[in-house]
Amino acid sequence: MGVYEYEAMAKSGKSVRGIIDADTAAAARRKLREQALYPTRLEETNAKSGGQSTEVRGGGMGRISQRDISMMTRQMAVLLQAGMPLVEAMGALLEQTSSPRLKKTIYEVRDRVNEGVSLADSLAAHKRVFSELYINMVRAGEASGALEGVLVRLADILERQVRMKHKIASMLAYPILMALVGVGIVTFMMGFIVPKIIQIFEKEQRELPTVTTIMINTCNFVRDWWYLLVLAIVGGFAAWRFWVSRPEGRRRWDAIKLKLPVLGPLYIKMISARFSRTLGTMLQSGLIMMTALDVVKSVVQNKVVEAAMDDVKSGVRRGRDLTVPLRETGLFPPMLLHMVELGQRSGELENMLIRVADTYDEDIELTMNGIVSLLEPLLIIIMGVLVGFLVFSILLPIFDMSSGV
Image (cartoon, rainbow, N blue to C red):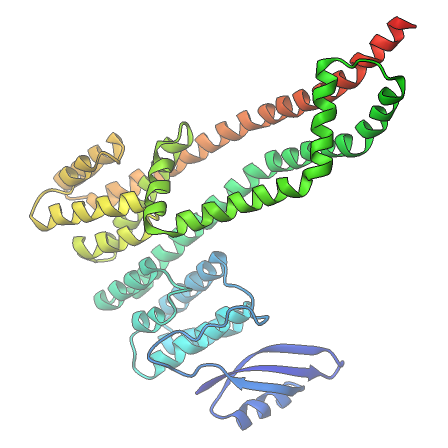
């Protein structure tokens, strides 16, 4: 069965676009007409080419958010737990999915499963959509016969990540808004108010205070050379992006992030939480330690930690306890090391890792709240100092002229 991307006219005259599955292009047109849609363009999009994904980037298909994937995973788990066969469950998902790109991906995965390919291998053809963690956990679930439980765990992980991102975004929204307002106020004063007052000072031909001279020169520089400032900012950002895109630059940047004051410890906690939850969930799903460590390496998203994970894997492969090579990296916090050691002694390593991840997630949220609560007054102080400097620079020569009169 093929997957077709279409553009069509509805009875109301409105142009619509989407995807539909059918055996042939003629059958696809017939199905569209049955839905009172009259196709103006129809193109098959699921041609297989060496097992590579045929995902569409752009072209009006939109993007697939992590929230979409988490909802799809939860719905699939519920359908499978209700006893629905996998192919039928994926067909039901198509009716509940609103994202055109995700719907197209589900079409292609369902067709491959229907042809006898495993679900994990079908998902692996769409690595831009499904992570290594997702694919390997599904593979473990299929091998153990507990796919429904694995999907529930995956949904829990994805939903937790979505909630964490939303919390961070909501916490940073107010400080960012304040910073934008502050920049806007200072820009307005320097661009419109200060130049008019400068004209008054120039007509008086008086010697101006040093503070006022600095303010005038700054305004003149920004007015005359603003495009250089913009180019410097854009060029600096582009240079940084180029630097971190190179392996050595990315490794150094990741090392810098680990050593930043205040933010460095927070970043290490985030990595530790991601490491603990991923490894614990993988072990709960039935993966062996070496395979789980391979997946963990792909999700830590830090080159320094990834290199350290190679040493950890080598140590575990030689028969050493997990705690020993983790401690030798010098990267992981003591609490994580103690909990891993306790988990290995008690035979409950998976549960201990999940407990550590929950603890770090709570600690991260509290730390973020503390940082944001400090950012708000700091931004107010900075904005007050800048506005106060401008006002003082303007009022000082006015007071001098008043005293002269």
